[in-house]
Image (cartoon, rainbow, N blue to C red; front, side, top):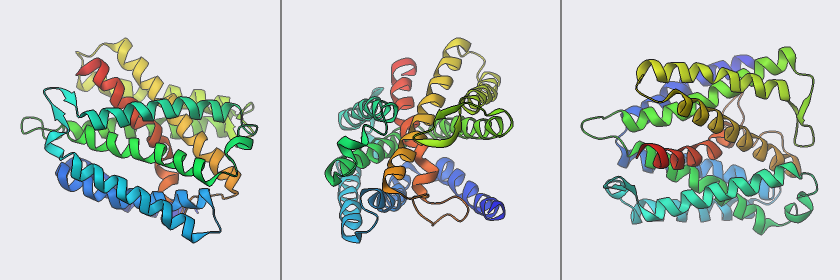
Length: 285
């Protein structure tokens, strides 16, 4: 298993980094459609793991919505005079509201599953609210690149990813070494409070890197934003774990050997990216 994880990471990380930094945003937005359709098919298994018609129906719905977004909002119109396009902004705000609701569902699980566990309609809606704001956030951040700063948008996307990776890595090792108190045993029995604290502390490495590259930034703000994004990313992970637990599936898919599915790799990002984008608009635009 570890060998497969390493091999997958060796080819996947350069591919992701190349797309983030070197793909023009107009190509990046269409490449993302393919990635998110794989994630949508995997979410279809969460809706009903036995019915392929349901899975493909959900995938088709996501395809229509993502293609419509790319057509209705050209990449050169995503930002205008420092403001995010109204459609993108509305989706981002709805996404943030969804993660507030998701937090309540996670905290009240398994009782909350009595409300949504057997409803294909609600689980489909939850999937749309999880995937589409993340899609728009990725494109919005990437579109912040300009001729003067061609890698700026990619750097912002990478910064969020780095925060998520630091949180996950710190949580894994701290949990293994010190984990005694379960974080949310009904949702994800393996996660511990000590692991979460370790993950949050690890993100300070990201803060250090930001301050070295951009020392004019306000330290307190950078620390606060990094910790908040890290916590939100943990919510994304817990939320997917909750939905998979009800669906009785371990991994969302098998397309990434040793890692599971695409959804398993982006679960934390689905929460972190739209929230970070809103924070960026509030404090840096």
